[in-house]
Image 1 (cartoon, rainbow, N blue to C red):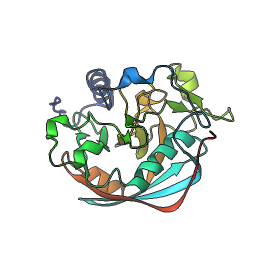
Image 2 (cartoon, one colour; image 1 turned 120 degrees about the vertical axis):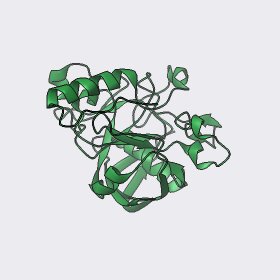
Image 3 (cartoon, rainbow, N blue to C red; image 1 turned 90 degrees about the vertical axis):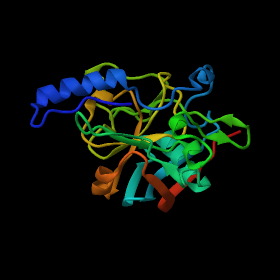
Image 4 (spheres, helix red, strand yellow; image 1 turned 135 degrees about the vertical axis):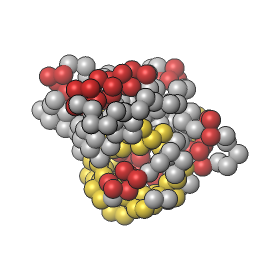
Length: 245
């Protein structure tokens, strides 16, 4: 999908207006399976997804170099747990960074569509896939997970739209933030993720941040659409807690 070209040395105000317009036209993430999330259980202990206890350090070997991510299991246990589980299953190995937006301003690098690792799937289908749980044969989705600094546990299932409240989020869209992509349904995140190339407060409260880049942000800046995530692995932490039956 094409985007307008940024005029060099555009003012911060102009760039922000262009970014807001782009956000309206280019919602992050998936465009399928959102309807399946109605009435599904939310949160740790009521989901089939394991939750992360503590933190996890993840290594991404990409076609442009190595990146390290630190996941926060206190502020985003369910979302981080989903990511760690998929890393350990090898779901991300060989996948394509199918959406990289740098114009009119730096925005996101997005990848993680499991079907993009299949050479038989045309590139026009990248960004439409979810993780299919082999135990159920169904797409495994997770709800939007947001934690406020003043609250002991995350909230689930509903975006935070009040700017005064979103400023209190424990994890925000700073440069290097790692978050889950989704469709219009807040409870439709699955495998696809993105890294913020600059601070994106417009996304706070709408998408679940669950970690950040701790090393290799210059690699993320170099990634172009079509580059690959060669291998993802857990190098530290990553203790998963399975939900009670």
